[in-house]
Image (tube, rainbow, N blue to C red; front, side, top):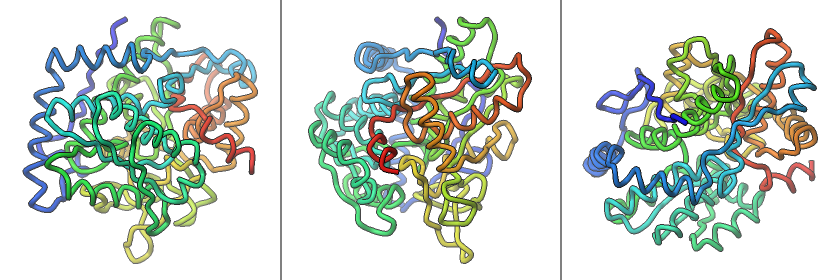
Length: 397
């Protein structure tokens, strides 16, 4: 099965996708980030590095994850619905793809520690797992609110040897966890690498994470062709920072007949502070060292982001998503908490697959889209993670 697909939308030499991305950093860090970019561009095409990473993805993470024809859901909604099963990966989500890549990269360039943030906990678990495998130290920053929602996840990270640091500032969620982890990295960059959890941050981080997540789309494209003989008509993924979506979209960007949809969290409603739909309601701004669409209040300050899915409650979004929205290649849509929870139950009871609340946003839009398209068109949805972490919370609603 051929899985190497390269799209032609790449950042420029300064890390910009059109008007978005780049590097807005203190001078003391610019040299280090240039080293990271140069090392990554060298190592990503290194035969030994790729052979080792491919081995880990196959025999450790369990790739390729399958594309599954959701027969019961297809019958229920009258359209063929297929699921890319990233929930079947080791650690339960797509995060292991870039965590293994980042940890191996860090090891190859002589770093001894990984620093990371986490919201829902899936990136934290994946990073702690990869750090244990590579025998690296690991500090994970997590907001207090998210830690309380996902105690088993916190316990698991600690069991893997990670130092989980509770962040009590601001809304005590993902944005503050990113703030704290970036600050820590600024103090330890000589010996540590920031294993960022999405396609966000200053260049070269969006490029690095997209490279390691592109395996999702490459596999899915080949698998769908193998299953049906054609490409899907519609491809859907949830979007917070945007790593699983960029990974899924990457192989289809040059296929003009394939429509792409990013499902953002509308949360409780359209008011600022009630959602994390940054591409829908955001304005251009600088966050965590890069330019993106950003939720802002009436005074231009960073607004609080909210989603029932902790992994989506980030006030910014990856720069490539901003560019893809600007060019019209991807259609970004919104899903409410209520719709996501309904989809969480629906997929569980219809297919026996319990999705992460993040992934449930994509499922919810797939259900909605099914009633709007011709009968002969097919939908492919990325199930970015499994919902074990969300069960107690959802059942308490």
